[in-house]
Image 1 (cartoon, rainbow, N blue to C red):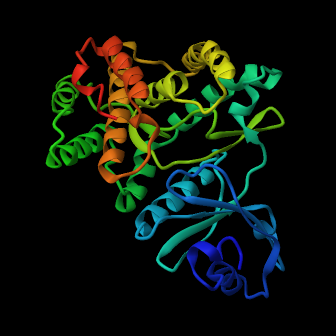
Image 2: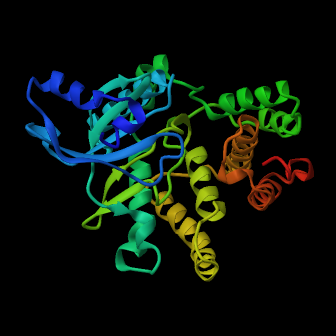
Length: 337
């Protein structure tokens, strides 16, 4: 039984789907091997034998949880649109469902995650902020209206992040957790005009970017895609770059802290050379990004799931971000994760 069969059923239905698609007696040249990461999906690498063209390349199989057919469809559509627009997004080659678990088969783009070049410092590592800024600017320059119109029908969450966060806060409130009501009201009252909307990755950081031969070869993990001002996407990146917990030995954690804020500052500086940033709204989106992450952590607790923002020490870091950006009292939120 292959690694895929172990999670989707007794028969290798993914391989059968490829055989039906190609009309060939396809087998594995390299059987599926589980990859690290993928907090809410299972991801495998594989290679096929008996195929030609793109299917003969190294591949990635992403298997979603039962009942997530709409999410799989949404991500497949989004990948195709962005790939066709010229962004380095893995091409989706085939979709299907096995034993109630939807999956997508995509190309495996070459390269290492950009974060791997940051410690120890390397020549490529020093270029990571500029490369990421150029890629973010290219994403933000795409025609957001036309792409949003196509993906809206299959979207699994509100396309605007403020709408989605209000929906999540309401769910927490229904469960008896009212700690976010005040900050949600502040965010609503101080929200900038919904103008200059762009396509936002929503989780754009060096571990979701691949680099090969000194250039970005792939952007992965589009689960947090939104349509919003560019400042929202930039703020999410800055909060992740500077505050996200890292699983490293204690001696390395201090080294990481020493480079995180300079990397974030460099990223913003390079982006400013390519596209303007509205400084009057950037602090708002910093406060929003930190709040949204606290909400994610609180929902994880409600659902009995693990989440990096649920730990008190991480929640405290996000609360400090909110206080710095918005001048709000966050004492009620410090146990939110």
